[in-house]
Length: 290
Image (tube, rainbow, N blue to C red; front, side):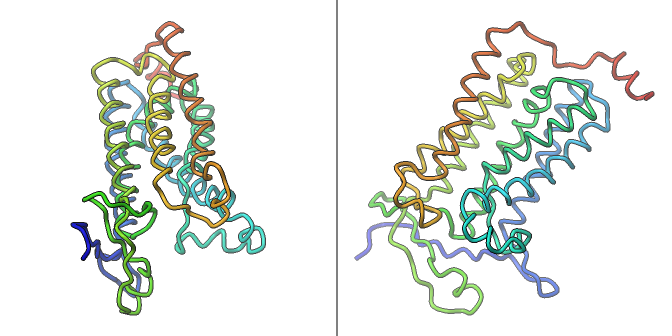
């Protein structure tokens, strides 16, 4: 007899329209960006940023997230296949996004954004984007939960989830579901960690004026997101077969540089003098005339 566990039978799709499925993952992704935009817009207004900046950073971020996350998956997790089938890199609808690649893509995009739009230090934009990004990460992991993917090892803990292993055949062809052993719901573990990071960053920006210390918010973001990811990976199933022979899996190796960068950013931010994050109204007016 099975112990008290949760049998997870959520359908990945909400409904179909014109033959195309609307999935929870896509919905959470879109809602995350909309809420993230609202948060970013409030932050930019608080810092007296020109009205057009938030709209532009939103576009930069969406494009960078999709391209970076897709390329990250193809390069870090499936290069052997995608190097032989390069056209399949463009088939995003078939799944395969990597958060580390998305993060790298956003950093590159915000470097361009800072050079072409704000003409301010890159850390100014990254600090402010890190806050809503941590919330988007929460919703993405909940999307993974709805997809019955990226879960953990078998567990005897009472909150173990039985996920559907043949979710594609079950969902598409109505086959009988094949359930996993009770497993760690690592999607929920990560979502809770990211939610905590989001709350800390919001408090730091709005209550502790952390936006005046360039790199401090980003440093906390890197450590909070990627250190929690590093430890949760110990109870998470490998995403690709080649990871079985690795001392640390790919997600852990990719997280280490971000954690190190986070420590460096925090130390740097606390050692250097504060730099007002609020934009001078005269400078804003001048930019509007240009």
